[in-house]
Amino acid sequence: MADTFNYRIDHHGSLVRPTELTTARATGDPEALKEAELQAVKDAVVLQRKLRSTVVTDGDFPREDFRSAVLDGVSGFRRTDESDADGLVRWVAESLPKANGPLLADWVARLAELTVIAPKAVLPSPAYLAATTFQPGHGPSSARELGEALAEIVVAEIEALVAQGVRLIQLNNPLLLGQLATDPAAPGALSFEDALAVDALAVRLDERPEGVRIAVAPGPVAPATLDRSRAEKLYGAIGADRWILPFDQGTPTELALVKALPDERDFCLGVVDATVPGLEDIDTVMARIDTVGEFKDLEDGAVAPSRGFADVASRPLLSAEQQRRKIELVETVARYVWGNEF
Image (cartoon, rainbow, N blue to C red; front, side, top):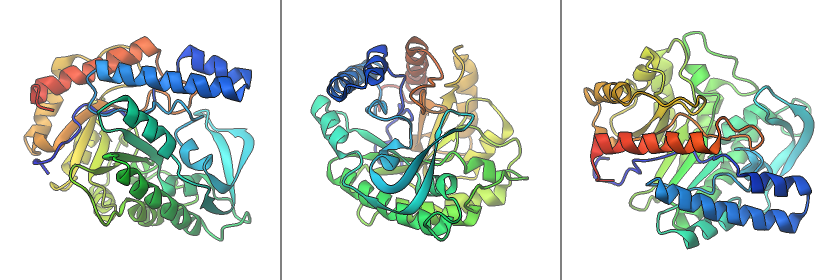
């Protein structure tokens, strides 16, 4: 895919929420919140342009967490009072979901008005949602049935986003990498095979205009050990154009994940750690990328932080200033690798 535009300077989509936005959300005034969200998105677009990003997102500013685009936009889910260790509120599927309209269309339209850079849209993968919201005896007969219903909603949303001019859509499934370990993590309510089948449904797109990429982010941390056959099965089953892979720790399994990727797929390397404020040594980062260049065509690559900076709005991983420095470092790495040709 070296003959197409690869969005060299990428990020996962979620950004640290500004103080004005969190204050407006706390007041409970819907009009004030709407105004604060729009202003925050405008400011985020300016920031991303200054940082020379080749993608622009709304920072997930209008949403509680990275799942909210779907959970807030479809019927069939009940929010509980429970939260997990990452601060994610637990939702339970009580019936098969139905979309109540477009999920991200309004914000994509606003982004398109604010910049000539094609907006990027980020959605939770249907397999991830099914694995984490299915509860026996609550509506859907199985997690697989729930996942397939969600996949239909997600693929319809992807088609609508592409029709509006979106050229990069990312699906997040943080559970997948843990299931590639030699001793895989428990899959939750959905088996590894069923997860692959469900997410494969979501990335199918009959018509791909020039430059369109459907990406999968399978998790922010590579497993300690890697079953190469399971990695190959992952890439073979889910026909995503682009894989966003962790590459910030310098571990053998990070490298093995890239090696296992078929040559016809794009890759985006998460080269800076979005969880720690200290900046990486650029020579170390470049040495890791040089190693990838020994077996992959770097023209099929891109770079990004390792994960979103605030996948949960109330739990940012870094400060806004630390976030800015990390994204600036990603841009510097991109210029070292590809010069000014983005």
